[in-house]
Image (cartoon, rainbow, N blue to C red; front, side):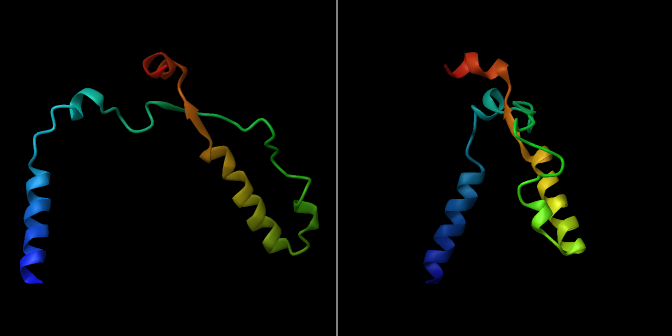
Length: 85
């Protein structure tokens, strides 16, 4: 068992030191390839389920969770389409 663990550690260490000539060429800054997008059916206060929540605390929590969609929706920038298609 000890030999197996040492081999895993050695393999991991060797992997970390492998040359990666492609990494600089293809890596981009995080989210530089994305842009925020608002879902077309997004509304600030959803009429479908929110009125059915009678507890004020639960309603406030549900509304806060619902509004996260405005921050979570992203799409690929149009400039990327020419590179992959």
